[in-house]
Length: 513
Picture 1 (spheres, rainbow, N blue to C red):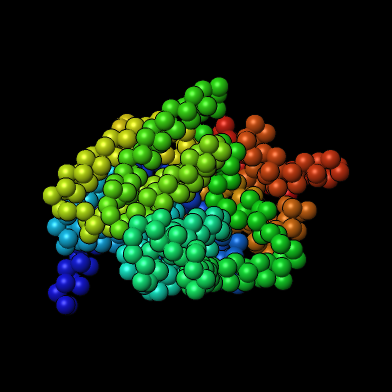
Picture 2 (cartoon, rainbow, N blue to C red):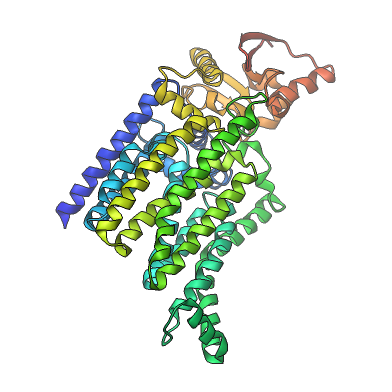
């Protein structure tokens, strides 16, 4: 037993090390993700200021990525989000391959998919929260499929805990609860005892008999109640805390300082010209083909007899959810919610199908699915509309990725780091990448600094340097420090400054008073 645990641990560490090394390799070629900078900035802020953990944690989205990265932040020289992603995908990868190998079915497909899938490599090395989304959706569908097989209360309780944890990742999980209602409705027909036959025969007996009808609805609603209890309780507690500390519902959800995607919220696409929607359309084409491919493993079970006929309901619901979200042009969530759901559902379906389908048939089917999915994923990342996905593929295929934003981050960071012990005032909802890795002796004032409001009124007292955006910057109108300087100028309050650094995106002003 101990030898197996040790062997699995070594495999996890080895696979995690590969993902971490690949992430470092991409960073040397110019790849970066703002989410990693944001989480590092929040962790640095937690230890830099004498403020409560709850306040910093509550003002951080996604909170689950923050908590996981915080536990690994003691390791120097490496961004903790990259460590967390590598570790999560290492555990998931070893679990997938080990489970498939033990069943002697689909093991080669699982190995090939883990080794060559851009989705898996993106999750393990991007420094974003995608690894958590992918793992969550895999566990989500895996538990549902396990419940279909065994009707176990354990799977329902685990599903409730999983959705409760997902509250710390994305509060839009209520859509997933709605997704479960029709699934449990159809499963309830197969749970009925003493009734034999196909779905229509069971439905006819259940709805024509008062006792069976009561048992049916009692089991159906009890299953729903057990699953939604923990997530809805957590959701209620969240709003209660929000009401007490925030003064009103959704108070904390209105600030740019809570989220990492302040840049991508303004510039989410790879380009900024009339070709945007053409690129989005081409990317969607490959994305929809990928939907079909990853759903085959679940749709194939439609031809199996017995209770397995309930499984296509999951595939159709996932398909409908993904298509509706993609049709709504929600580009920012495309890689996290939709790509993660498809990949997680596909991997769970293949792993579950190994028990339902004869090995001789399934080996060929699963291998074909894995190969086609990999090809479509390469095309998807190549033509993706999302700037982060496109940048990831460019870092793989090109010698160096050209990025004005990354050059801006590095140049301002180098300039400020050379100043040593100094004070900096900046809107950290915009400039958190520039501030996240400054030396400890450098102090900066951001949204949650004790003197932030006072420093906006009298910058000369609190800061030696001001970092503001250019008036052509997409977020200039959201830059609080730039707005404060305009307000001082409007009221005729002089502030002597000198431009000591500038590029296309930002300015560094030295306060002369």
